[in-house]
Image (cartoon, rainbow, N blue to C red):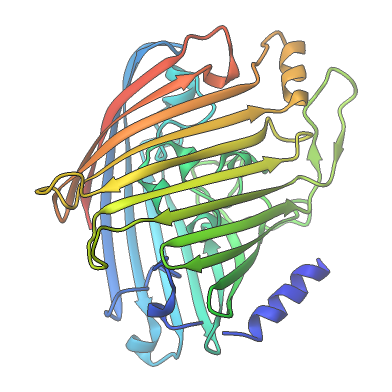
Amino acid sequence: MRWMVSAILLLLAHPAWAQDERPTGYPRSANEGSTKAVSLSAVYTADVRSDIDGGIARGTRYLDNLDLQVAVDAERLVGWHGARLFGYAIYNNGTHFSSDLAGATQGVSNIETGMRALRLFEAWVEQDVGRNASLKAGLYNLNSEFDTTQSGGFFLLSSHGIGPDFSQSGRNGPSIFPVTSLAVRAEGKFGTHWLARVAVLDGVPGDPGHPAATAIKLSARDGALVVGEVNYLSGGTKAAIGAWAYTGRFDAIPLGTAPSSGHGNSGTYVFAEHRWRGTRAEDADGLAGWLRFGIADTRYNPIARYLGGGLVYAGPFARRKTDQIGLSVAVAEFGDRYRRSQALSGEPAGPREIVIEAGYLAQLAPWLRVQPDVQYVVHPGGDTLVDHAVVAGFRIKVGQ
């Protein structure tokens, strides 16, 4: 933990830069870009997904998600200099799809939770420290700032929100959708283009024994999750390298021998994203793309490596400048230990699962978006005996 303490002290020696100074416009917090003291947001998302060929079973499911957010600029509201507060609640109907129908390891819908619940998702306070640094503490979704790209947010596949090499980790997942944990995060700018952040989080989000509840349980046995990321930001380019590690013990994937456990559950990832604009600087249309690679410790995690990326084009037609069209691919490679374990249990797994996704987003009104989407899942769950799955459907988003 010495390197973590040193990193936090180093961040505090530099400060949070003005909101309009971030080179590529990636938001630092939910308040960024708003001129209001208090900002409210409500968005309802509905997915209709159908397995129309292959997979485990044919069928159609309805999934939904309700986001309720309140962002407070404490300086504007009460004169608390450089402070921001954020509260975020979510509701999901808990419908299963990926494992039940498509048989996919990678979630084909990024609002799929498998548990009907109303939860407090985030509740934190962020404080600027000097001009180029900030501290954040509270209930925190690490994927709001770590391992995230703007282009990937277009797609419905969960792997394009956070890599499955990372999201698979932990006893109850890392602190991401839909269950989060308490955390402390430090962030700072270095020079013109460099941004670094580090976070220490409770190692087990929520309460695995009561998965539908909003719960905060701190235990020395749970350990901590430590995450760090360094970004290079310049114009339309974002490049990043990140690493994560748990301090607690984990059970190793069984191999038919005596159970074993140990420390060292960790991983690293890198990604690069670039946005091309139109012929004029003020053009909103243009092409964006990204590529990501990550690895995880194969003693404790099924997915050993992940490679994903895609392209998104905004303004594909002259009269549809706010529409977007995109194509992506996600390749999850399973580790040798996991494959041996599956073979011993009579459920052999192949080397990889591949998901190809194409979608079109139509902005019908400032408050209404419709997105038809199709995914082709090659070897769902890595099972070479399961037919490739075709998943089609659409998403509707209502609200702002």
